[in-house]
Length: 178
Image 1 (cartoon, rainbow, N blue to C red):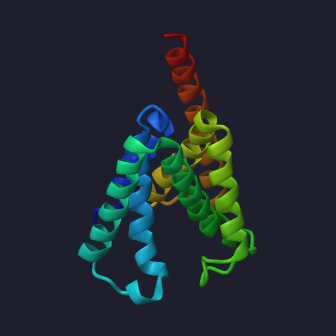
Image 2 (image 1 turned 120 degrees about the horizontal axis):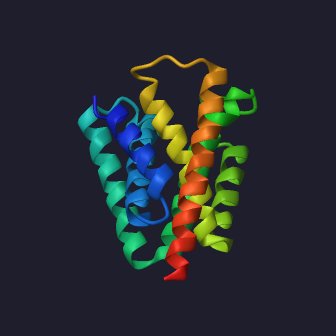
């Protein structure tokens, strides 16, 4: 199965170089969202793995292409995709969102807020979202191999996200000094 490996590698890339290699973060985000959408959109449900991979690759290439040409637009789309992905996973954990319908007002509002965050504070918006989304995907991929309790998952996620903020923040300040 390709998904856990992509989540682990993509998660690490998001944590450590999400802003610096924005086009790659956009591609990984597009792949994961496209891959996951095949489970949530009714006419795509039940697609074979190769169909899910193709859907992920297509969306990943679209976002990577946009990131190379229209950075702000791609940033907003990536922010929306990351916000929606995180909302559809985190909100059910707190009983706010039903897992059966990921297209609710709450998930769409959170996605829109994340898109605005990136539009207004581009560099730091990408750093914050790539650190959190990277940590989330790393742990999701790791969960295929190692069982983590809920508390351990949240503590490790927070720790990895903070590490990502510091690493990418240092990269950003170093980049701006040059």
